[in-house]
Image (tube, rainbow, N blue to C red):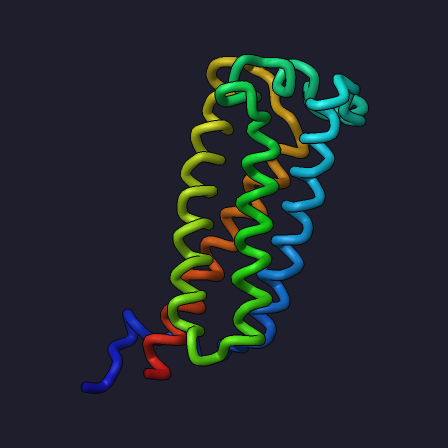
Length: 156
């Protein structure tokens, strides 16, 4: 059965570029998450400058779940994506499963980031630029993961 246009990747698709872009976005999100975790754990102020209100967001009740900083959970999510991306290089026979893993983690991360963005805007009325960077990075990883899954499905 020939793949339909709904299941194939765009004609200008470059799997290696997508992998490197995913890796870069993952490292960006990981760096931001680690920084925000450090800020939360050490009770320091985030370096936001005149942009946003990091302190209001990072000291809110939404910044922790059962005493665990949300930023730490984000860092763990980015570490999981990083592990799956690296595993793709070592386990090419498992590429579809690894792509599905990245997709799943990125889906959960994107949905939770959307929730937290709503909380920032509608409830706290304060925006943390670092949180926005993490949300955009996770959403981009999610979109790329869909394209990568489509490319894997069309290659099969």
